[in-house]
Image 1 (cartoon, rainbow, N blue to C red):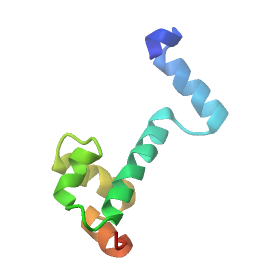
Image 2: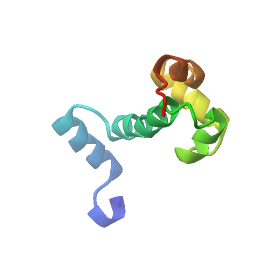
Image 3: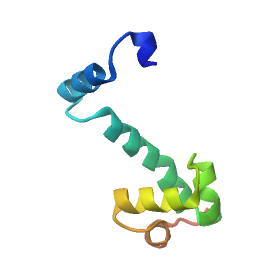
Length: 85
């Protein structure tokens, strides 16, 4: 997409930061958390299935990402937020 826009990644990041007050990468990571949280809230979906459903390459990568961003493990998040679906 950057090639299509004919802009450098740095320029896009700078404009994004100036206009929206945050970096592109931060928004991407925030958006990536939305399906993770939704899937974890459905207690009928095994946690082991969630990384693949949310587009993560491995369960370890998912656990590390989620734990770092949410400051709690996926299992603890589910325990605190699960809904009967």
